[in-house]
Image 1 (cartoon, rainbow, N blue to C red):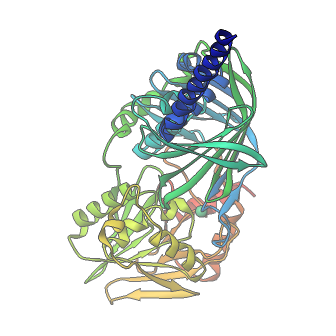
Image 2: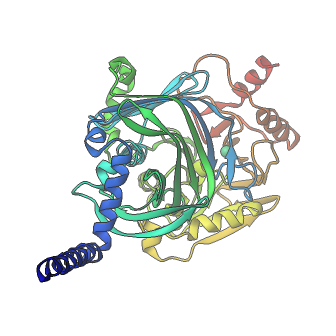
Image 3: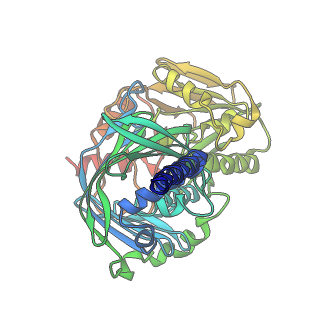
Length: 496
Ligand SMILES: [Zn+2]
């Protein structure tokens, strides 16, 4: 019986051909194609790309535990760990815009890509700066509910795929350059296909290239999609944020009033949103001594015969560039020889790199030497700032107990002042002008009403100034408005 034999061998041949074609197709799939397929499977596991595309807004309620990099009490520790607190986040991707409410007092922060934004602190409101808006925009784009829509979109490039273990479970790891230009490593759990982790490097002032990880777990059904109810963020390998959601709602009816920006700062918020500068408003407070008032952080500069000394390089390079501009406007183009920092906290040193790029020596308490050197030398490849471009060797000078800088016309005393806020702290005293620059000891915000906030450090500060027999009429603060010494005295009396 020849016929059936021929038939069965033909079947084997056809089947082998089919297998060859099938495996060939699979083998010739490029790493990028395999990566795309893995991301598509992840989208499927979350409810499908279409369902994810239909997300217009998301409201999350739960808790957040923020820990700030560079805000610890000592320079040798990296993190200021804060307690967990209630947190609500509403993101409207259609504008985009966002409302955040934090803590029992529901402190507000509104970020609106079109109108700008504001944050509330002690009942006063501050407009957001361009860097805040840009940073939030990046967070919106990488929000887990939207990430795959962007990663699989036309503006992203899928680079390839690998294998990795994460917490003992096998994962596929897809590399994708998203539309913000950042390279993400997307960890997909082999069994659930869901995203366990995003790994990336972003530019963060004052650290430059900052390695970041965000871990997702506790995926639950939210309508027709699946979203994680736990998000943990690590920076430089340290946990800097833990968010646990108790409720997530997609495409809710949004309350317009929540997004409203207080009328008194609407114009300011809008003009700042995408500006290329932030204000630093100079006031001459004594002969050759200027207060440079920023939005949330201030500095001071002192004119000597041959040079300028600046106290504090806060916030960002953008603020530093404006401060340098105002220094030139007020004292001409004398070189900035010294930039003195009061302490190592990130909000007070965020702009020192810009001064180092001008050739200024950074003067700090000896305890901060290492952290200041790190800030001045870390790689800034994603967004090279002026210092990175200048290739200058940053100069640091340290102070133990006291240093006097004088040329006969001006005298500035840098004095170590131990206090409960932070170690390695310098107060800056100008005996002739009878004024003193301090940060974070005592401040009154511009427009602040109500009882004064008197922290333990305010009393320590007061006692130290009295003990040293300094004559101080005016306090020049790193935050808030200019103060009379008497305002500190009154606040201490009122608080008992
Ligand atoms: Zn501080």
